[in-house]
Length: 194
Ligand SMILES: Cc1cc2nc3c(=O)[nH]c(=O)nc-3n(C[C@H](O)[C@H](O)[C@H](O)COP(=O)(O)O)c2cc1C
Image (cartoon, rainbow, N blue to C red):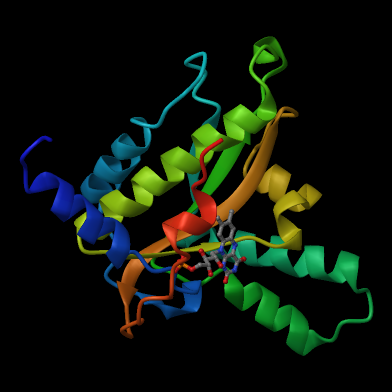
C-alpha cells in the first residue's frame, strides 16, 4: 500500500468541489496565468487515440454582451411570444461569473475509429481536471448548459466547425456563500462484481 498524504489531500479536494450556479460566482476570478494552469490540468485527461477531442473557449468580459444577444435570440426562437423582461433576463445571464469558458466537443470525421462516447468521456475528464485545479487554486466553479448551447448564434459566436459541439459553460470565480456537501451514493450502489 503506498504511504503518502497526497491521497488524502486529493480525496479532500475532490470532496470539497461544489457546483455553484453561475450567478453565485463573483470576482475575483482567475487571472490569465491561473487560468492557464487550470487549462493545462485539463490536458492530463485520458484520451484514446490522442485526439484531444475537446477544447475550451473563453468568453471575455468585452464579448459578454454578444453572448447575451445569442441567449436572447435563442429564447425568441424557442418562444416567439416571450416578453421584453424574459429577453432582458436571458441577456443578463451572459454577465454571470467573472471568468466564463465553454467546453467544446470535437468529433472529427478523420478520427471516427474512436467512438464519440469515448471522446465525450475524455472531455468530461478534462473538465473535471480543470474544476479540481480551480478548486486547488481557491476558486469556486459551476457548470451551466441549456437549450441555447446548440443555437445557430452560439455556433457562430464560438466559431464552431461542423464537427464541433458546445457542451457546457464553465464559470470560475469566488463563491459568495458556503454550500453544504450533498449526500453521495454509497460505493456499494454503483460498484458490483460479476
Ligand atoms: C455537462 C453538465 C452540464 C450542467 N449544466 C448545468 C446547468 O445548466 N445548470 C445547473 O444548475 N447545473 C448544471 N450542471 C451541474 C450539476 O447540476 C451539478 O453537478 C449537480 O447538481 C451536482 O452538484 P455537485 O456538482 O455540486 O455535486 C451541469 C453539469 C454537467 C456535468
